[in-house]
Image (cartoon, helix red, strand yellow):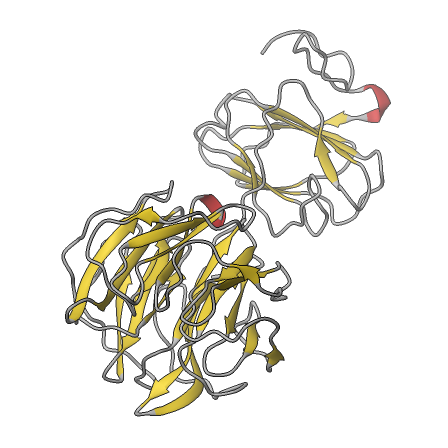
Length: 410
């Protein structure tokens, strides 16, 4: 980009500027971090490294900051904006904002608390905020040696399952779970019609009495980046949406074939969509959940029809279904593309079993855990969808449990 520096308006000619109104241009920044101040312009040179820029923790409407790609290298090493507790284009700073196009210049103006910092420039391609992925997971509830339990087991960002955490809420099995709100999880339904929210610290909260029909063996899926849905099931052809605050809505009439014991997973960037598939009764079909929570009609499936399986996300935007019961215990898997297409069978790894659960971890990986016969083993799923051999588990071996991701902090 060329042209004289004249003032602090980005003109249609592509001329940048600086200065009038008191904007002060700073020396070229080459460090990997920068704490920016209002009223300044910064040349950001990312030739050698990316740069995380922390905006001021307080601002007044009209405050302005400008960042310019000094060496046209943001396409290789991006800048990452940390809005430091203030909103950015109307989104809270739990979202990631980066600029990764070479030659970009970003003119930020603070508009007030509601919208916060807003880029205003004719030469900026402002990227949509991206929900950071969940880093940890949790397995909870289930049937252990013929008795329901409420214990939970946290999963670290490296896929290590922790020992039992004492039960909170009603012990139950045949339960569903999902991530919601970007960094929390919810267990719901099962043998008792209650739910339990999991905070972003992994603490399970006390019972919330549910609305809508009781459901046994439902499946939960994230959708829309921060919401969730629970499926229909045997005896209840209804679904229930979950808000980004964890409030479960009343029944919505079900779409597609009514069935229980499916697998469910998120797919698409930031859990934009959900999918559930297979199910009790020998079904080999799937249903996609749109970004606004609308369930599609049946899609003819591929792979082995089965039930009592589990599903999770991997790779940041894909899903995987695994294990279950066909004519016998099953260990195969089926990947789900980032457009919701279910692939043919991949040969199983690890112990064949059903009534298991799955969760995400580490931002782009998943794991299957526990299962019939009171098993406590897990199988890690890499960010390319490769399932590992059995990992000896910890905690109470059980089945008919559920799992979900939580926390955006490793």
